[in-house]
Length: 426
Ligand SMILES: Cc1ncc(COP(=O)(O)O)c(C=O)c1O
Image 1 (cartoon, rainbow, N blue to C red):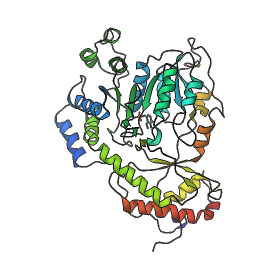
Image 2 (cartoon, protein in one colour):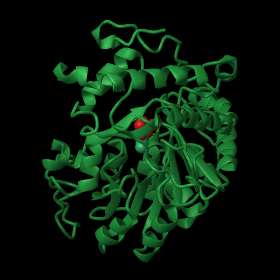
Image 3 (cartoon, rainbow, N blue to C red):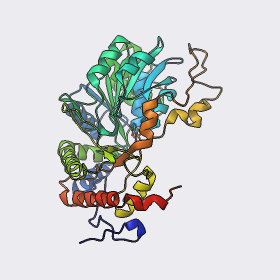
Image 4 (tube, protein in one colour):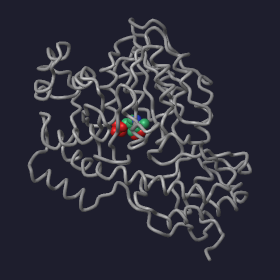
């Protein structure tokens, strides 16, 4: 029997089994990357080779007409913002509760981010906020399926239609997740995915955007793809004339990374099923811990993974701060983390420091001067205090034994929570 003494105080760690490393680098990934290197094809300026193969496979997986690969997920969002027709003075709705680059992509597209609060006890955009916050200059809404939890897409689409907005889904945490039987990324006008090394399938660094609309596909190609590909693919009057010069941030994906993602894509559904099963198993084991509150997931969605979120109820944990709990769990061998900062309170947004001279906020084309204040999004601000992320993307096989040890760690720290009163975390 293992000791009940907390590892933080020198006791034996609850988790002794090795945690699978992520991303998986198995024979299959190695073979795919080596094959790509031996083919001598380290850059594809046309839509050709492994890039075309992956884009075809990803479009098919998503059930969409077009997939366009990128150097990273941020680039795919920037290109989607451009494709949506956002220009100087235009506004884009976005949650603050997301990774910062998915907000900065709006500013790179010359747009002004308008922050929307999230649904009660959830993580994703509140559709009523879309109605409340959209103004005459609002062109698009970015809907992030945060921590793999799909947003309420029926209501989002309804609100977006009322306000005539382009819907960009950010699926960087939610590869393989579904909403009412549809894959996320295939519901709005465009779906963007990061393939960065910590995501559900990886290119190391990479991204991909999907859409059914030729016009959006062609426009999204302009900011970052090479004139070779632009010349090969652009057909519309509004895009073709710029094919020679392009717009050139250079957002092409690396074929080596894409070879890796292409090998992993074949396993995505199986891995996602196993991750869900591991999550369910862990949840059942620790549901009795009153200060760990599991979000309610409607039965019409299936989760994707980038960790899995729970809420920490500090009052129910005898007042022990979340970061102290995380420190104790980490000592037991469960590396928990917190969610995102409240970005609009950061100096970048408070100082409106971006392109200098206040742009894009005070751009002469803007109709109103947006400012961001504490208290703007009460649910988002509360969420930032109570989210805990349990790593889950590592567990692509049934991992009952490790989940048992995770559960043991949670129970051990819960039983000893009062002993953490003297611990401080800077
Ligand atoms: C929600 C979300 N959107 C976008 C991105 C950007 O992806 P990338 O890091 O590939 O640029 C990330 C990356 O972590 C993310 O978490």
